[in-house]
Amino acid sequence: MLFALSGSASGAQPQDLDAVRRSVHRFVTEETRQLPGMVSVEVQPPDKRLRLSACADLQPYLPPGIRLWGRTSVGVRCTGPDTWSMTLAVVVKVQGQAVFTARPVARGQRIQEADIAVRSVDLTQLPAGVLTEGGQALGQVTGVALAAGLAVRADMLHGERVVQPGQTVRLVYRADGLQVTGEGKAMGAGAVGEEISVRTANGRVIRGKVSAAGEVEVR
Image (cartoon, rainbow, N blue to C red):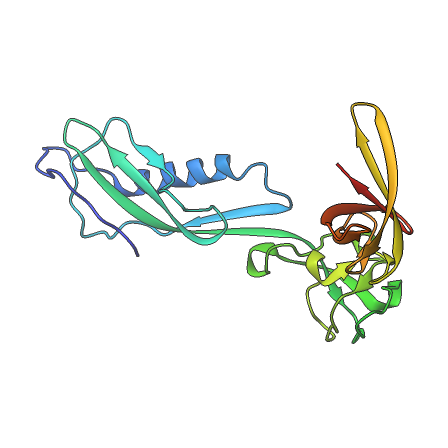
């Protein structure tokens, strides 16, 4: 258990420690209401040896830099008549769907239904960016080789590369209702929606977003 306290504990009435735990539980439950999936909250109770003065207004709060996700901590303070504060360990679990590889998938392979499986898991135990729907992966191309049973992240996949390095691409400039076109050489591969660098005829390097096969939009 993580805790820290300050101030006086000399009040005649002792603080109900379970009330402290319940106040933190209510706070975390409310703060995590909008998380995707089924949320469960576990709050570690304060050390029973603590002797704190009774508080009329318990104030749970989230310490700076703390996220209500997985194993974390939440503060609770009392501002009177005596002041004290403590921190309780909290576990937030979010049961939801995640996409996993059903078999090894080679780099550059287009994802098919047989390549993936959707499972119900605790999302807090997985890396950020994990896909939660099979449709997010289907038709995408792997940027790296994927082992079987791996949670699939968005940064592991990309759309079909419709621009290749060294390819002459059409540059489209759009601003204030005007459109100007030109040409350049792509310096990297890109799928629709991805940014790539393009070298123009005068040697200038610019960044733009792939908008179609062989086309890059610059703003």
